[in-house]
Image (tube, rainbow, N blue to C red; front, top):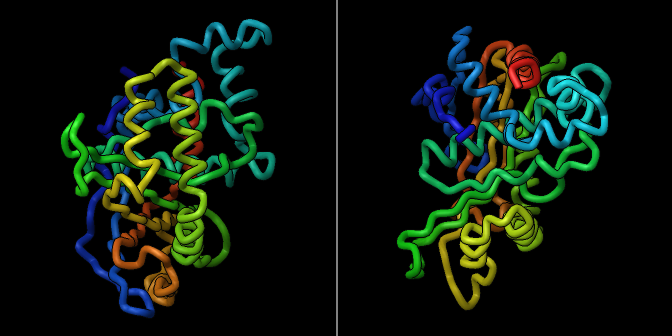
Length: 272
């Protein structure tokens, strides 16, 4: 299998707590990555397979006469320099890291279907950013079954901090109305790839009125450390969120994150 969680050893809870202007707690995490070839290569493989399964690359590149690396860089991955490619890279990276956090640290099942069928590589995928699922016992429904819908926003470059946590909260509030479409999109992709058993699992969460479950929302801001400003983050307001009682707020920051993003995409292409 291409998936790995080894890079999450670098994601560390600081124990620091901030609160929004209206008193909602915010967890602060740091990403302390290292120049470890083994971990970076495993992570790059994991990252690449979100866009294109390794077993499919050779078939998909035939018509272009591209190498594997050229196919990924030209057709699949957002551009490294031409706008808006770099910002799409940062956004996809942030979403995938938050998906890993949900799956490997919090124990959710997170289908990896969001990026493989992008029609335009330099555009963000529409819909809810990250959906995670917990079914307490297969075959038997429980009100404790949980759907987590997280929104992630990044800022890895720029002259001054932007209100990315506020942007994530506002986006998360909109997720309440686009959840049904995003669930359908995941189910449809799973069905199309003949993952029928997983597609059926999505059905558990498509009718909350007749089949109630726990609904968790999340908003995550990811910063380069030089752009993380605690005072600015603390100005965030969450009270208008429709799922306020089950809203999780996180900030993740790390040094030179945009350099890491580009290195991960480079390895993902060159090591395919």
